[in-house]
Each structure stands twice: as C-alpha cells, then as structure tokens.
Length: 341
Image (cartoon, rainbow, N blue to C red):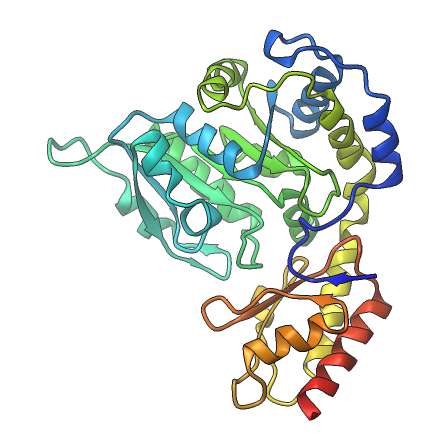
C-alpha cells in the first residue's frame, strides 16, 4: 500500500462516495435538470452564505472562470506574489481572459493594506483598469490570511469599486486554522472558488460561488470554456458527501502535519519552515550534501512512499486522508535509513 505525500489531491473516494456516485439520480446539467448537481449547488451556496453556486471541473477552471466573468480584456488583476493563480495555472488569465497580472507581497499570510491601496489604478489614460483583486486562503504556500486582513482588503476593494475573488481551494483548512466560520471568510469576497478534491476526497470538481447574477454570467462562460457537463450528478454526488462528511476531519490532517514536522526535525540538517505550518503542509529543506533530491525520491519510492521533488529549493509533504500517524513514523524512519546509507 502506497503512502502518498505529494498532495491532498491524491486521496481516493470513500466507499460512501462510490456508492452515492453509482446510484446518483442524473439529468442534463447544461439544461439545468440534473437534480444531484442542483442539490450540490444549493447546499454550497447555503453553506457559504451566498446566493448561488456553480459546479465546475477543477479549481483552476473555477478561478479562471471567475476572472473571465469579473473582468474585461485589457484589465489588470491584483494577486499575491506566490498564489496558485499566478504560479500554477499556466498563465491562463492572459490566454483566456486577456488580462495582465500585478502582484502584491503576502508575507506568511499577511497583506500590507497600505501597499495594496497604492496599487489600485486611478483613472489615467495610460493605465489599465484594476478589474479584480484576488486573495488566496489558505495559501498554497501553507500560510493562512487572518480574517482581519481579509476584511480590510475587501473594505478597500469595495471603496474603490473593485470586485474580489477568493481562491478558497483549501478554504476549509483556513477556517480551521484561524477559527473563523466559513461564511465569515466567504463574506470577504464577491466570488469564491472551493475545491472538492483537495483534502475532501471527491474525485473531481470545484464550486464557484457568488451572486445570482454573477453565477448566471459564469454559467454561460463555463459553456464557452468547454465546461458544460451533461450527467454530472455522478460527480456531484461525491461532492455532496465531501461537504457534509469530510470537512470535519480536516483538523486531523493539521495535527498530523505538526507531528510530521516534529519528526522531520529529528533528521540532522532538516530545516522545517514553521512560519508556513498553518494547515496540512510541511515545507522543509534538506541539503544536497546530506542527500540528493534524486536519491531521496528514489529511495522512498522503493519503499512505496511517493513524494514530489523540490520547488524553489524546498520539499513539500502534504498530510491527507490516506496518511496516518503510523505512516508518518514509517516515512521518517525510512528517510533516516536512506540518509545513513
């Protein structure tokens, strides 16, 4: 049995999800008559305190759909300097929506409101319009943004008539980390994207949430982007269980991440970044003089443990539904053995 620390997207659907998918009542969602999709969208909008929601194929799709729906071609969007939209969505905002990106610093989750205020464009013939401000929470760097910072950003954006999109791929992790109700976080954005397949075990899908008018426009843009699904209730059935049964256990992943961090620090020269240990991700460095990246990956793979290589000089291990405390002990023990040999 593999131990997989690459991401919390590697989780398998639960048995209950598989049963729900097998027996889902379906229709043609492009016509709006798939009852299971409709149920998921209603559940999500109520959970987040918004008017409407839309089922989409992926988190990247949800974010890019939000950008397309909020902006006009030639606009500029403001977003964090290490966020997923910028770093891991293959430049889609430029290709799909024709917008340019401008970044603001997010220092371990903190947003400098005064700096952000100066970045919002004025009415000048030389400037692109500031069409959208994007916040990510929890951040893909492992940090979280405080509710106070999110509220300050949203108040600033409203005062300048700029919409706010929240990339909430791991918004439930953020909710746990900052002890804030999910509706409080969602209230800091005009739209929210939340993934059902990150930590929640659904096999496919994300939800885009906002006002009825925004979702009406987004539904047409979803069709334009090729995301009009047919009997999507088979997938939505798993999404319903992701939201109703799997959110409450995410705290276990956070606890396991802290345990993993403690165990990794037993390894000489292993430096854990505890400033970004707010959710279920552990970022750390191991010098090449101790063990090479290739040797670590291959050595763990030989013991049926999957990890990713370094990014910007760091390793990232992600705890998830398939990783237990015993698994963590085995991973660290195996790493020590590989290094000693």
